[in-house]
Amino acid sequence: MSRLGTFSARLHSGEVGYDFIGRRRRWFLVSLVLIVVSILSLSVRGLHFGVEFSGGSVFQFSAPRATESQLQDAVAGAIPHGSSDDVVVQSVSGGKWRIQTPSLSSRQVTGVQEAISKQTGIPADKVSQEQIGPSWGLQVSQKAGIGLLIFLAACVLFLWVVFDWKMAASSMIALVHDLVITAGVYSLVGFEVTPATVIGFLTILGYSLYDTVVVFDKVRENTAGILGGNRTTYSRAANLAVNQTLARSINTSVVALLPVAAILIVASSVLGAGTLQDLALALLVGMATGTYSSIFIATPILAMLKEREPRAAALRKRVEAREAAQGKSEKAAKRSGKAKAGAAAKSGDTADEDADAGDTAEGEPAEETAGSGAAKPAKVSVQAGRSGSGDRSSSTSSRNVSRRGGQRPQPQRSSKRGKSKGRKKR
Image 1 (tube, helix red, strand yellow):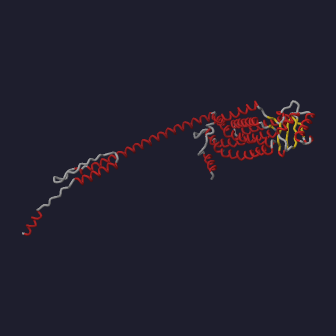
Image 2: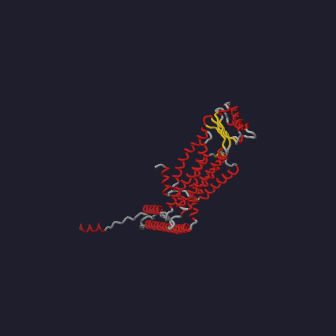
């Protein structure tokens, strides 16, 4: 098994893990900063709505040798009281260009076509023009809003029936979090909001909810029947569920984000601005934010709501009481173990002292005088120490010295044996 597979298995078994729920304030702070920046950008810069929403004139033509600055200056000069800010020039693949301007009259449209023809050298009739009224964009916006409300209502009802209202509320908060941040990124980057962008927004709503529902299903599995015991708290069980689905969430997100990032890069660098670019940016930001919110926002909010329930609060107290009692028993066991180790060490020291005393007693007789005709032995003092090996070497050396220094008296042979032999001969 690979290292990633081993790590995923350890996460699923609870052997390793990260405390997402316990550190929820950190993630809430990060999300708060992102939301504040997004709201400020939307308030100051706003969204750059495309011609489909704001209305205007669109010119399309092919001019491979033209540049963006040249076309922008030429079109802005052909519009009365116009400026370069009113003109949006977009490069399309194959040397094609798409220019958006505010709504123009027929005479102004003709003037713009002639200005483009003079700048690029192409005939004026080769510059196609399309007039889009703001009513069409308004209808698209209204239909998108109605579709979004229906989608949210259906999701809330489904989550409420399948799970409970706390899970439904947590998922909706995470969903709003994803929408605000994605809109803020659009405002900061300055991408144009088109119908493709609306499609991308609706797509990321479904993706974000899908990832959140997967995590919530695991939370429900881990928390089933724990309120009546004292084994673990709701927050810990929910945190275990997040760790168990972490590898799956990351793998799914990476696999989904790689092709979307490829589409965004190709659409921006090769094909130019267009529908693919608008759709890819919404999908990229929304998928990344949806994965983040399902792990760091939705589940911690759910744990906060659940911990306020009386049964969950009582469960936490029981778990804390059990852990406190278990901690006291472990401390008592450690103290008793230390006491036993100290007693064993003291008994070992006493045995060493007895052995030292025995060695010293064996060396004392060697220092006594052997007889009257013998020389006096050399006096050797044996110093008893606490080390057993040192005492034995000292006592042994003292015995050797006493044997060499003290001469034993030779026994005198008796003459009685010779006299008895003489009697027998007689």
